[in-house]
Length: 161
Image 1 (tube, helix red, strand yellow):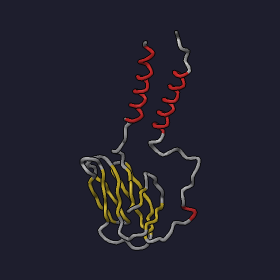
Image 2 (cartoon, helix red, strand yellow; image 1 turned 90 degrees about the horizontal axis):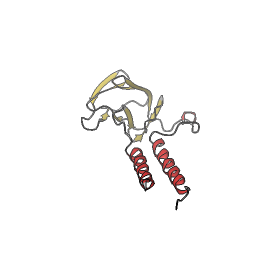
Image 3 (cartoon, one colour; image 1 turned 90 degrees about the vertical axis):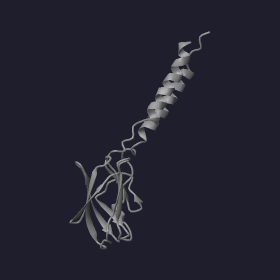
Image 4 (tube, helix red, strand yellow; image 1 turned 135 degrees about the horizontal axis):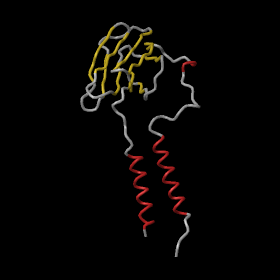
């Protein structure tokens, strides 16, 4: 009779851990450059067509976000409720390379932003293969393997009569 409760308990525990895994929204990150969703990927060079720059991201709630574009600095605050922030450059940028640094606390991201480029050079594209999976995909896969393992284990046990 005790074995009847073991399976649902393990299943419930596995699902709880998998579905309620912590999401670290307070980590400082750039999520968008204009309409381009960067998905937490950081490169040393980005190409951007419009001359009016906007940056979006996440950080600690209420934190200062320092944005350096070439020699000019702007400081904005992240939202007190969810830590999201958005910066819109007040003027249009020249169609050339710009040095961009975005910092909050001890975390800093630096890259060159080429404004006005029509296309990205072939050698600058991301290389696929041999890299780690994107964040957030490991726990659901482990949860699925855990559930499958429990189903196999309990499905092939001897039935006592």
